[in-house]
Image 1 (cartoon, helix red, strand yellow):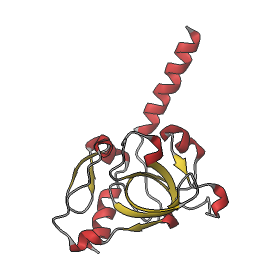
Image 2: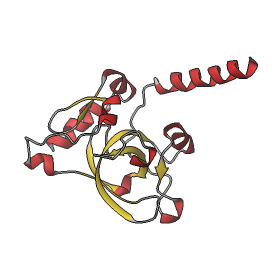
Image 3: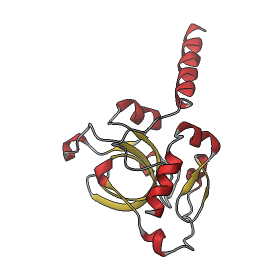
Length: 166
């Protein structure tokens, strides 16, 4: 019984921490919901350049984020600076959208804003039902966070709009 109460207490603390608003630092370039090109090495070591969506960010590399999301990450040996922002991304059109290998924790330097939506206003969102846990829709430029996710990243909306319109 004591073990169950301890586990419940831990889970409640994690849920509470997830609801705390995250405030941006100037070093964080990108926002949740942006469509990005990810240039990184997959867990097997080969280079992967695929479209993805940012689901969350951290000010720097955090092991606790990896455990929370159950993600793969760029191995430290690839020479990335651990003191730069890191992003949780989900790749488009995976075989299994809930498979942890479709989620990566990548450094900011491995991401670049996907600019094609400036040219293709009728772009249709790729099919990945896993994205709609965090987002309510794709507006033709970015994935719009649902109310709960927007509350967690309250300053991202204005920054995202400035990046897209820029």
